[in-house]
Length: 354
Ligand code: AHM
Ligand code: MG
Image (cartoon, rainbow, N blue to C red; front, side):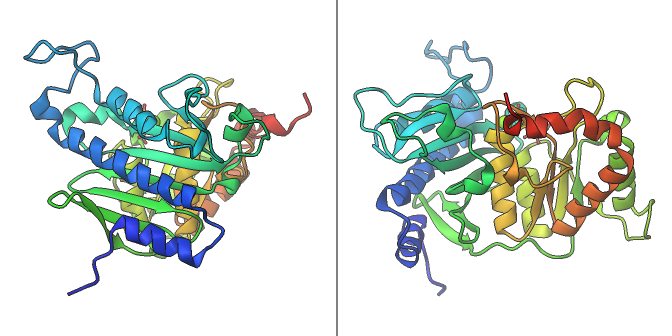
């Protein structure tokens, strides 16, 4: 029988190998696994329990119902607010920094999370996910500040996602490879199922919302035509797979090989940065995919090198097999100078003198 390794054991073993990881950090990963189990339970019961629908719905007992994304947001906060491991949090569901309540101790890390990404998919029973990222505190005061949260992805201490699909999986990295755990609902434990995930060298899929094609820039259009085998060097077309749920699309491409694309465009020239959020979606996914041997870019350079300027800033995202993402950059450099001129100030905004 194969060795059975729980996420807890794996985290502890990893900690022994890398003594710079502290106990606080190990427990923080374990807290995220607990949050994932509780959210998974509610997600799979969503239809039955009448949780679907608007946040002000009532169930058959007349109790106030919570939308699943509100539930997930509060659960992650509640599990982490009193542990003394964090000095601040930020969530896609909240405008500003989330403070640790004043009566609880604070710690050396900050947590950024998207509690339930792809939430438009909840009501139609399509896989959704939780995304999280952990930075080390860099300021000196007791409480965390925006400066602790707004750090480039290159500085991440850890990142991960949970996918609520045909099974629930948690995939995380602390900078020493990417590891995946599948929830055994019978025993309530995440068990190691995918050790040291590496993106396969041969991509099978590309994932993009093809419905936006008319807005795409020339470079992006030509690049996608290349993936379809119709432009540049002849190639066998890649399959097109798009769920519209970032965690699911990237998870599939991580295991099978592929590229996910959500580009910026010039539909509104003063908003050339696409849809996805740097701090709650792109950074964590870029960290994981780079740890697995892939690459993530905004079209100009690595997502991980972007110095953020705001919690909710958006970025274009090209993520997956390194050769394909670099080819996308080359197409953009060649054909999209007008888009680059509009977008570059956003990429460099935090590095410009005030
Ligand atoms: P959300 O944060 O509002 O859930 O939006 C993020 C989601 C991603 O999961 C997904 O990759 C993308 O939006 C899909 O967008 P679109 O429907 O425009 O293709
Ligand atoms: Mg989201």
